[in-house]
Picture 1 (cartoon, rainbow, N blue to C red):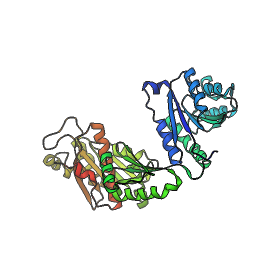
Picture 2 (spheres, rainbow, N blue to C red):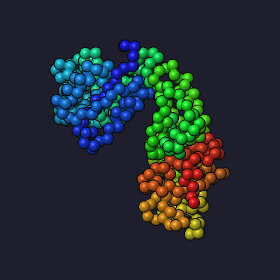
Picture 3 (tube, rainbow, N blue to C red):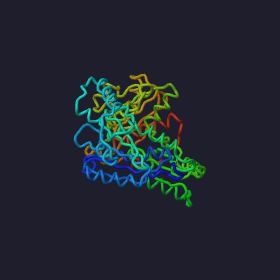
Picture 4 (spheres, rainbow, N blue to C red):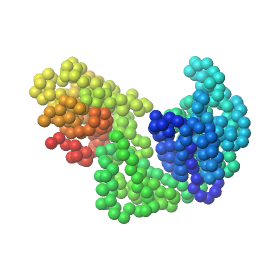
Amino acid sequence: MKDAPLNIQLLLTGNEIMSGDTVDSNSALIAQRFGEAGLGVYRKVTVGDDVALLRAELSDMATKADLIIVNGGLGPTIDDLTAEILAAVAGVPLQEHPQAVAHLQQWCAKRNLQLDDANLKQSMLPQGATVVDNPIGSAVGFEMTVGRCRIICTPGVPNELAAMLGPIAAELAAHAPQGLGRSIVRLQTFGLGESTAQQIISDAVPNWPSEVELGFRAGAPQMEIKLSIANAADRDAQRHCRETLEGLFGDHIIGEGDTLLAYRVLELLRERGASLTTAESCTGGLIASMLTRIPGSSQGFHAGFVTYSNAIKQSVLGVNAQTLADNGAVSEDVVREMALGALQRSEADYAIAVSGIAGPDGGTEEKPVGTVWLAWGDRHTIRTRSLVWPVDRALFQTMLAAAGLDMMRRFLLGIDAEPRYFAQRQAR
C-alpha cells in the first residue's frame, strides 16, 4: 500500500435517497467509523437507480480512488442494481456464488422462510467477487478489485451496514501506513450548546493548535465535541486539547465515542450492584425507554411507572390527594412523593421522577408551558429542581428525560456542582 493516506470515496445508491424519502445517514456512519480507525473519506457521490449513471460514476471513481465503498442496491428487488453495475465495470459476468447461496439458505432457515427466486437474486455476484459477511441481513456484501481500485459493496439497511463496518474498518486500518491517517477523539456532552461551548473554548484557548481540528455535532439530547488530527505525530497535541476540554467541561462530559446518558447511568448502577426506578408523567415513559434500549439494562433498571393522571399518581404511587390539591401535579411536593412512592413499590435503590407541562396547551402565568419539576435520589436523599424548557412537545420530552438521567448520573458520581442548564432553564 502506498505511503500516503488512502483515497476513499463513497458511492451511495437509491432513488429513495435522491427523492428525500430516505435521509442519508449511512455516509455519516461510514465516515465516522472510518474516522475512528484513522481513515478519512475523500469524496462521496449519490446516484439514483439508473444503470447508465451508476456505471459511468463507478467507472470514473475507480480510475481515481484507492478504495470505493458502494452502499445500497444489494437486495432482492428489480431496482437493486449494484452487482450488475460492478460486473459491467469489471467486464465480467454475473454468476451464482455458492457462499452467498449458503448464507441465504441459513438466513431463511432461521426465520422459517422459503428461499424463493427473488431472494436468490442476491446470490448473483460478479465473477471473481469475494463475499463480505453480513451477520444480520439476507444480502451478503462483496468486493473485488478493478484496476488498482478496491471496491467493497455494502447493504443500504443501516443496522446491517453498522454490523459490517467494524471488521471492514479494522482490516483497512491494519494495513494503513504507520504515522499517517486520521485520528478522532469524540466526547459526548449534555447541557452544552454549540455557541456556548465554542465561546468558552475561544476565551480559554485563543490560540487553538492548528494541527488539532475542533468540531461540534449538535443533537438532541447530546452534543458531540470532536478533536481530529491527520498524523500520529500530533497525538500529544490532541491529548493536551482533550485535557483542556475536560478542565473546561468536565462534569458535562458523559463519555467518549457513542456513549449515551442511559448507558452511563446503567454502567454506574452495575458498578454499585444497584437498581433504578422511574416515575414519569409528562415524559410518558421516555426515561424508561431510553434505559431499556441498552442491552443488559435489566441489571440496573428495576421498574418504570407512567402515572399521567392525578388519580393514577395517587393509586399507583401513593401521592397524597391533599398534596395534589394544594400544589398541583407540577410541583416539588408531588415529584418528591412520586419518587418515594416508586422507590417503595419497586424496592429499587434510586429513583427519577418528573412532572411537567409539555404543551402546547395547559400552561398558566404561574406555570407556563415548558415548566417541569424533577426529582432524583434515594430513600435518604431526594433532590428536586424546577426548570422551564419552552420548546415543542417532542423536544421538551427528550430534553427532560435526558436531564433526569443526567441528574442521576451526577448523583451517582457524587457531583454537587449544578449543571450549566440549571441557570439557563431556571424557573422565573
